[in-house]
Image 1 (tube, rainbow, N blue to C red):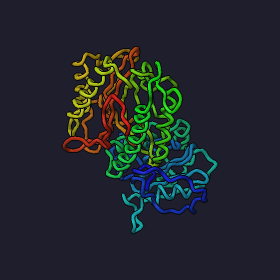
Image 2 (image 1 turned 90 degrees about the horizontal axis):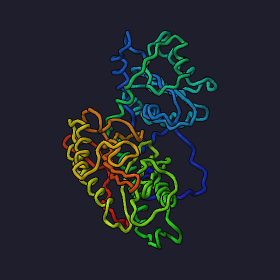
Image 3 (image 1 turned 90 degrees about the vertical axis):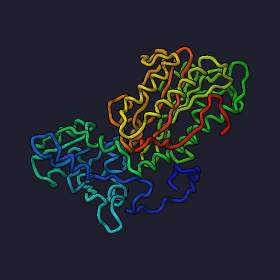
Image 4 (image 1 turned 30 degrees about the horizontal axis):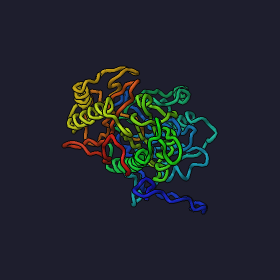
Length: 425
């Protein structure tokens, strides 16, 4: 069990953890670093680049993708050449780094799965990560190296590398490699999306169990608020082994028109309750799902908005397939919302459709490709499809699923029912 599968994670036993070892983690996808050699060959520098360097901490998603190392919140570095990769691990993390970066990417015959030999180094632990990176570069490729780095490289690390007489150029190679998901990555996304659906089901059940008393909803003996509902969702997510990461967005009434509302608001009958649940699994991949409910809807603005979003979602999905232009997906969704009388180009704080139809999801909650871009969709792209309409005085409605692009269409990574009236799930 990986912790975000179909059963809740086991409760702590109080036993000490098993001794760590260097075995690979079966729940992690592998990263094929052979793309780095192509990026080095295709460098726009005066000559072929020698290595790719990334510096960051556990919150740097490019570094997480390159290494599969879920290290600490202090900087570490990786240096990758065409056939070697060195991770400079932080203090006290050598065993974990070896397990996730080296052993996980080594076949049963002891050879690297992608032809890139990996190692973990722990010398000079007190030096800044950029200085450690410069030392590894000097060792692997010598002085005056030509280096590529993601745009996220910290300024001080870049200064260390440049002061060591290395030439540094920015590259999108890592972001580009992350666009198309492997089968293992898709499996991670399916698993975390199943857990996401469990959290959504808990929220819908709480809403269905709530009773109307006067102008408020009461659940389990007290007034229901966005914060009480959020706690129920997050508790369920934790039970299924994923972290909410502060991404459980719940708004009610006017605050449902706030795309990222995480505050406290009363939930009242007749108001839209918008739930956007986006947890992260232990493998680093995100889920993303949005549904909207109304307890005792009177059939006004919220019903029209809901029907419009359902139609826009279907119109958008009809355009999703390999070879399609991503921007067409957004155009079709916007056209459908227009047909229902909603402004497809509303600005923030205005009434109408205020955002794009979708974005990529992977080790970042928001990554490429954008469905508002001219990118050509490829099999293996994973995107949200999330049309929504908002009115600061009325509320907000959004319906969102996580979708993998296939050669002949799409796969919804986990189905969840639709319906404006909440039901017990």
